[in-house]
Length: 100
Picture 1: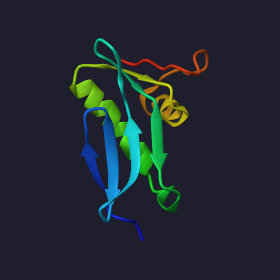
Picture 2 (picture 1 turned 30 degrees about the vertical axis):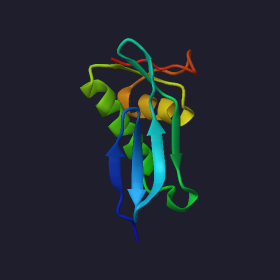
Picture 3 (picture 1 turned 180 degrees about the vertical axis):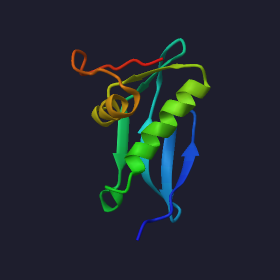
Picture 4 (picture 1 turned 45 degrees about the vertical axis):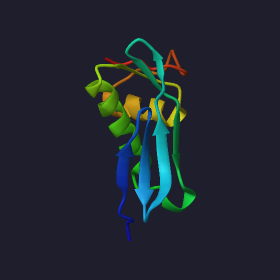
């Protein structure tokens, strides 16, 4: 049975909430003028494998783009997500993947 997840967007973080408890997060601090770095993704062990991390990163990318910002990533999960979902080539730059 899948748990119902609510997503809350803060200034530089999106939280995944289940039953009133924060069970996941993605953080994306501003690193320059209109530039953000997705630097951390976490999902509670009990809820891994349900697509929550993917949804967190997707929402972070959409939020950064909505703000007119450039998306960068140093989080290993976010880098893989960007490669799979946005065609970002991370072969030569394993610690940074700018898109936009």
